[in-house]
Length: 538
Image (cartoon, rainbow, N blue to C red; front, top):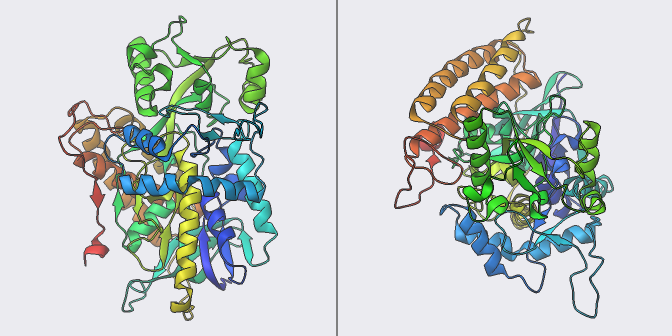
């Protein structure tokens, strides 16, 4: 039997953004935090590099703002960038207060006023401003925040819960547009439960799983973006998908990212013959922004017909490499690669979704009562290319600002009345799950081939034709069979893929992460690509 639940705040997603919001809400509120798998399955746990913030006396807010604007290809919203950077120090201090074990600087002292934590530098940054926990920052942050959440009796942490769709007044045929909660599949029982809430928060991460090769865990399926679109929210700039330049290339190394901090500490990109190539593409060489590095690697691989290039840090002292990058060192060693003596085979892989659900500084979407934070959202911070380590910062800054906004609105919002249960009376169990598997594979392959690092009009047209056929097939399947995690994710991925393709077709230029052979130049004016769902325009 399906169940009914009521909470003051429903948080869909258990990563950095969702946990930050939940932990900064008052202790008297009933909060549900949903994870569609195990709690640690999200992208946060796997983040290696760190969090960008203005923490050192030699750094300035203006410098961080300018670096971000430069990396963003003219599309960053300066007000959003400044808002994020100006709140960076307090966000980091909050994490320190929670007990996050950031790596300390052994050379810092009270006498010289040095910042007590070690700061590193990554591509696009003009200063060392990346605070980190060795090379496993995400794991350190997530573990700490999860431990804090477990100690809060008002926070329910619910695993194996897959959000199916948002419940809005419009969906129920009522006057108004407010979000009232969500229908959620309980994978433990196979039933779809009803979660009513005064406020609903989408913190579901990005959609990099739409591509065949990705650094992201399996759950990065664009769920929040697709649900928000169906509920009537605008989305923006979904053509900008960041491909991390360096993922480990090995048949057994699924989705293992080689942190950009290696290049920040002097690692060099080389061809199979040992020749460096990045100085030919950009004066910043290995420290150029990610889009430039990823395109350079893609170009060299296609030019030479090779499967990978190599990232070499073996010229650094072995102890330096082991102490700064213990996770990368140990993981590569399991595949027979000693990075203190050998170069690492690497390839680009889909990594980050720069566009998303349109929000303001408090995480408001177009639907009242619905917030979107973290990679799910489009704040204007990242523009046409996300600068390294700004994404985790965005999670904490916007998680905290959305939390403050919810607190300010509490008195004016009542708990929704009893909501109708999920209707599964017209569907049956599927005996054709091979269709889901086939469509999943087809979608990710044509997105990689046609909507990848380098695009053309013809490729995008082919992708558009195929995704529309897939959407029709998936809608028919969804209407006739009981939902499963695989079906829900496929439905969401196909929807977000269609939005990505439409966005890419609208941009008649090459800017940032969107590079097309048909329009290699820049337009005079930088404009966001904004898509409006039919329900929003009604």
